[in-house]
Amino acid sequence: MAEALNPVAAWVVDDTGFPKKGNHSVGVARQYSGTLGKIGNCQVAVSLHYATDDAAIPLDFSLYLPEEWLAEDRRQKAGIPKDVTFQPKWALALALIDRATEWGVPSGVIVADAGYGNTTEFRTGLAERKLLFVVGVQNTATVWADLGNLEAPAAGRRGRPRRKPLEVGIPKSVAEVSQNWPLENWQRITWREGTKGPMTSRFTAARVLPSHSYQHGGSKEEVLWLLAEWPEDEVAPTKFWLANLPGDTDLLNLVRMSKIRWWIEQGYQQLKDELGMDHYEGRSWQGWHHHVTMIMLAFSFLTLESLWLKKNFWTTLAPAEGMS
Image: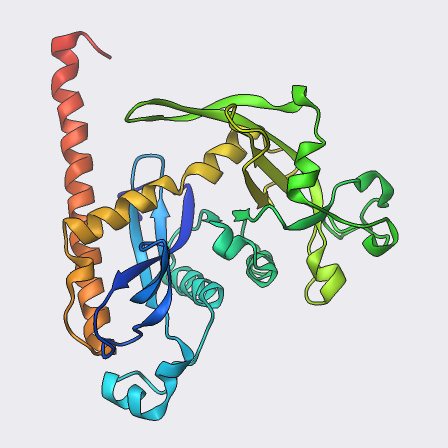
C-alpha cells in the first residue's frame, strides 16, 4: 500500500469507539467515545493511518484496555497476552508509530487532534524520535510568545533558548496569545474543495515556546509553530495547533497538514458502515484483532480499486474532451 500511495504526506493518529450493550467483549467499559460524543458503554481503539493528498488507509489499530481489564480473571477469559499492560492512548499511539517505523513504512508528518496533541509527553515523544508533527491543542494550552526576551539558542542546540523561560514572565493561553495578534496577520486560505464548495477560513501562525514542561518537569520542548484558525463568523479564534515544522514553513503548508485529518473521519465511516468493522460479536483479544485486520485489508483493496477506476476514468475521458 505504501508503494501504491506515494508520496506520503502524513501519518494520522486518531481513535474511534465501538458501542456495546454487554460487559464481556474485551476492553468494553463506560468510557468517553468520540463516536458517541459522550461517555457510553463501548470499546475504544487507537489507530494510525497513512495519508496522501489523494487517499488514506489504516496502517494499524490498537485496542485500548481500561485498567480493570488487566485483572487476572478478565485477562484469562478474554485471552489478553501477559505482556500487555495498561497504557494511555497517547502511549499506544507512540507504540503504533514505532511499529510502523520498524516495518519500514515511509513516514510523514505526524498529525493528531487535541486529545493527543495536548499531552506534552506525546509531543516530546515525537520530538525524541526526530519526527515532524502538527497536533491540535486546547485553547487553554500555555506558551511563551514574547520570544524576543529569550536569548538565541546555543551552538548545536536546535531551537531551544539559552536563557531560562521561567525568567521571562508568565506564559499565556494560546487563546489569549492569538487574540492579541494584529488583524492584518490573518489570511484567508482554501485548503481543499468540499462537497459544498471550497473549504476556506482565516489562519495565522507565530513561533512560541510551550511552557508546561518547564513549569512541571519532564523533557523540555523547543520553539514550535502556533497555528490558529479564526472563522469569519466567530468572535475569536476557535482552533489551535502546535507544530515543529521548520521555521521557514509557509502558512499554506501548516494549514494543509492541520486539515489532512479529514480523511480519517471519512475512513472510519466507511470501515464501519460499508465493511462492518464495528459489527464484531466475539469477545476475545485475538478475535477482535483478527476481525480488524481483515477489515483493514478489505479497505485497502477497495481504496486501490477506487484510485484505479478514477485514474482510468480520466484517462478515457481526456481525449474526448480535448484535455491534456
